[in-house]
Length: 106
Image 1 (cartoon, one colour):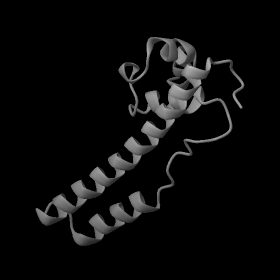
Image 2: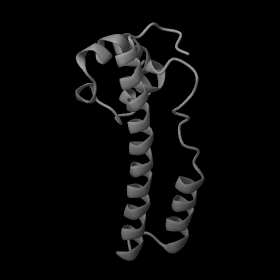
Image 3: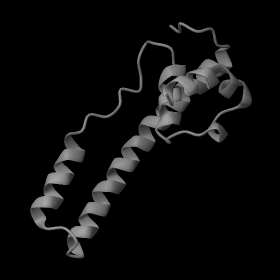
Image 4: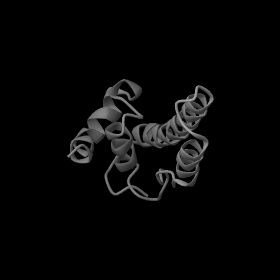
């Protein structure tokens, strides 16, 4: 399953972190849509601009978080996107992906 070697506990934690990142990405998208709606209601955006931006967000493909690949890679990507932080991971999980986070942030 994983190209890198993780303990079963760390691998399980990374898979859960991937799910957390996917959920947070979806929540962020919904908050952005709500913000666009609020801005339209307050007259800060015209209807066309609001709808164009909402449609862009709705049609934007989510990051493909789950795969058969190394679960550390999407977790590192989630960290680089600000969806997951070091505090969300145990010290063992963080140590296992720290180099991947460095690469993702380049």
